[in-house]
Amino acid sequence: MIGPNHERDRGLTAALTHVLTIGITTILIAMLMMGASAMLEAETERSTETSLETVGERLAGEIDNVDQIASEDGDSATIVADHPSSVSNSQYTVELYDDCEVTDAPLIDDGACLELAAHEVDVTVHVPVSADNIDDSDRVSGGSIEISTNSDGQIMIEEGDR
Image (cartoon, rainbow, N blue to C red):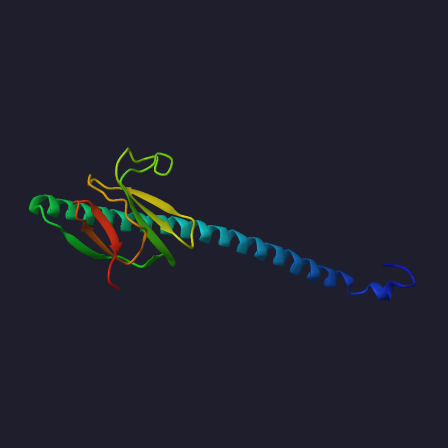
């Protein structure tokens, strides 16, 4: 600046440029971190859902095996199936239903199903089961699951020995 006080304004442009650069960089990094966090959360939910579907399909197959063994022999049958105790770093529970509610599992027509629900992530998956004679069992934690027939010939699930 031209005038008697021009020596006080020297270097102001460089300092102002540095402050603005640091401020804009901070805002951009914060926005990048927020976007990455949202993407990570969505991927965690999708990974959990896929893992629960896989475990559910395996359990449904094992339930069908118990049903087939029990119907052929006429006796009781028991299978202890080992599954992961957690999926995507989240514990989960399994529940066997004789009749799935339409609101809970809209893609499953009236019939038996497994409900797998994760604890840390808000994900619940329903998997159809083709066996007909199902006992609405208690909720069991993921991991070692015992699939057996009770005295009435109904299939039930319980927590297996760990």
